Image 1: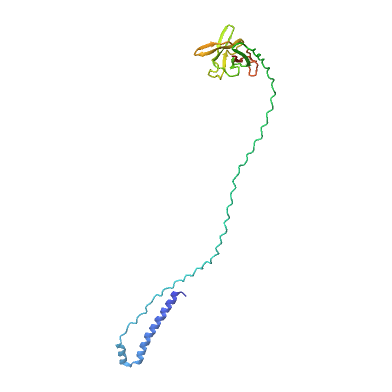
Image 2 (image 1 turned 90 degrees about the vertical axis):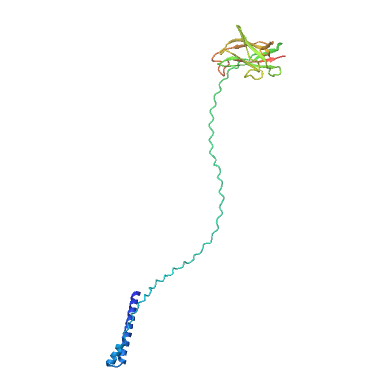
Length: 253
């Protein structure tokens, strides 16, 4: 049965009780009073009062009592474990690169026979002149011909300031630049250039000292004979051609 139904039953019971009380009082007065007209007058003399109607008081509907929520049982707090100390990361080492195997050695080339050395001019006999000369070596060259060398004193020290002259029969000849003073000369150096492919017999000697600008003093010198020859077989780098003569002039006094 709902709460509202219970309240309606209670109100009905109270109304019945109130009505029964009012009817009972009226019956008692009739029984205790006289009869006949006196009684009717007495009843008539009492004005009827309005029986108050019962007021209905709204009983508040009880609200549902909230069911308490279960209290969570506290859990055991885990004890912190020891944090492990980080270990040192090893430094990476250089990975060695594979080495290349050694290349096979080429097979040795068969030795080629060396050309016979050109006969060197014999040492010049002691000279009674101020300068003496000697051919030191012949050089093969297919592109040019000429003579080159040094001027030295008896102790092997270079001597500068001298011109060398080369000539042949029917040609007055040419002079070198002053020894040791030319643009590309070292101390005591000189050279003379002939026509490419020159052949034949030429003569060469120390000509003079330079004593001033365009001033030269002749000197006494031995004359050295040079035999130039030219052919394609002998002028190669390993040939024995006579295209360039290397000569050393020595100052004797």
